Structure formats: structure tokens, C-alpha cells
Length: 392
Image (cartoon, rainbow, N blue to C red; front, side):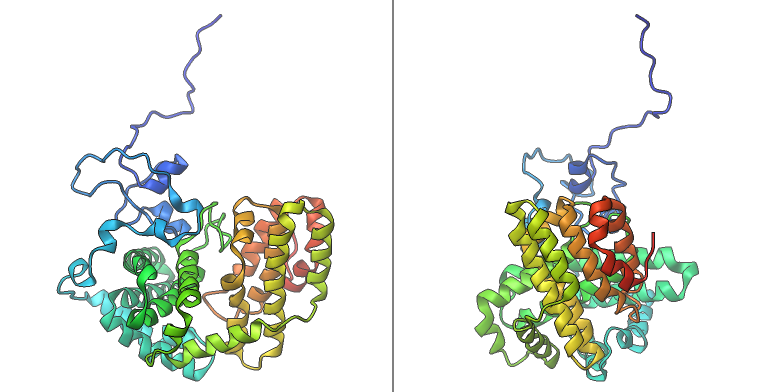
């Protein structure tokens, strides 16, 4: 028997033991860029290394990577959680480039984040003021401004996107540990940073396997942050609502959420989808799928009943906050029925294409959903395909 020859197509390479935890768990090569490697930046997930950059050997560990759960606690690094902002960023001075980003945010980007004049002024005036006291909010401002500039300056796109991701990664590492204790005056900046993070998620370059609620089979940071804020409201709702510092933007969102609870009119397209799911889906998955449909049906009804563009935007995006966790677990496993429900959400995104940070997402998602479905399931999503205007 002839001896096996080495595969000529495989190039020898040195095995890196110093990559981040996410790349190690997925068994892919990590470029070890600090503070966040490019793979983690692309997928919008928190990048963590097992040892500091000074080259000390990594400590042995046997912990399971916690990114396949929705618990915010798995994202909290003990070293970050115990470090106040004043130590993480001592005597902060900003570069000319950061001042340029801040100026662009004040004069341009902030005016594109909302449709209502009052909401625009809030993003232009109040959010930067929060940033002066809470550095993670300010870095979120830098990040969204850099992404906006990247659209306007294509020749500088790569460097601006990189700076946006660096700023947002640093901001997230500070904000995420605060979720478990964001009571009192800390709630307002964390709440608005979660909204900024959602916008940044939409505005950043889209990876092929990014399905918004799930990216490469991993729950993204923005969703964990949003769910953390939601859990905080559920557990400390009365205390939060009694705070005098809460602003009109927060109360407008709460009123819309209350109206959402009572939107129970039928939606013909979703009614047909629910019928198909009840007939053909595995019995143990029907409840989670139908809960996802109910949440989306209420968003469609609210979207069609509100008067202002600002309320329509919030009504559409409310589904990402309200969709139940078991449904997201089905999306993580690329369940075909869950992908069909997500296809209907694309119709709402299509109707928000006037917002630069949402533009292109409807086509991005529907194309990938269609590719992953077989012929039977493709028939289930004829209505969203026609509404969006996308054809294979």
C-alpha cells in the first residue's frame, strides 16, 4: 500500500494558543487584534482573551463558553465589573479625530436617528450630556458618528468602520456589567446606550451569517444588553418609573409598549403562516413559534395604526425587544419555521428604508432566509417576498 502523501493544498502554519475565547470555541484562526479581534467585530460579539497583552501565559481553564445562553452574566468580565470608569479611563483626553466625530454627531448624525423633531433634539442635546458623565455613552456616540461618516466618505470607509468598532467594543465592556445593578441614576444612561447599540448593530457592515437576533449561531451583545434592560424594568419597574430623571423619550416608549399589549387584530399573512406551523411544525416547537408570530402581529397592527413616522419606527423595532427567548433559540438552530417568521419581519424593515442605518437589511435577510429554505417553506413566505419586492 503506497504511503500517503501530505495534502499539497494545506499550508503549514503555526498554531496560535493566544486567540480570543470565541475564536477558540469555534476552532477558527484569531488575528488577536486588541481589544476586539476582527471576527468578533464582524459578528458583533464581545471579544475576550484569557490573558493580558503583556505576554504572560494563559491560565488553564475548563469553563464552558457561555455565549449560547441569553444570560447577561456570562458577558461580565470580573476585572471590568469591579473597575470604575475613572480607573478604566483616567484623565480622559480626546483626540482631534474624536472631536471631529463628536462635531459630526451634533451637526449631522443626531438628526438622522429619529423622525420626530423632539426626539431629534433629544439625541442631539441630551444624549451627549449623558456622555459627559458616562463615558460608555460618549463612546457610543463616537461609534454611530463614525459609521455615518463611513457612508459619506467611502475612501475612508474601512478606517472609520474600524474606529467605530473599537469605540463600541470599549463602551460595551463598560456598560454590560452595569446591567445587573443599573438602578437609580444609572438606569437612564444604560437604557439609552442600549438604543444606541441597536442602531450601531444595524449601521455596521453586515456579515453574511448575521440574522440580527442571531449572528453565526451566537447571541449578539446588543440583544443581551436590550434583554438586560427589559429584565430590569420587569423586576424594578415601579422604582424605575418613579425616577424624576427619566425623559420623554423613555415614557413615549413605555406608552407604545403598553399599546402593543392590546393589539390583537388578525393579520392575514401571519394567520396563514400560523396555520401552516400548527399543521406541520414539531409539537414541542409550536408554542415558541406562535408566540413569535403573536408578537410580530401586534407590531404590524401598531405600525399601521400610529400616526407619526417616529412611532412607526419604534413599532417595527419593538418586535426585537418583545420576541420570546425560546423563539430565538429556534433561530440559533436555523429552524425553518422560525426563519419564515423572520421573513415576515423583513416587511417592516423594508418600510423603514428611509433610515440610513436600516437601509438594505430587508434584502440582506430575505435573501439569506430564502437560500436556507427548501421549496416547501419558500411557499410559506410568498407574501413577504412580494411585499419587499425581492426576487431570487
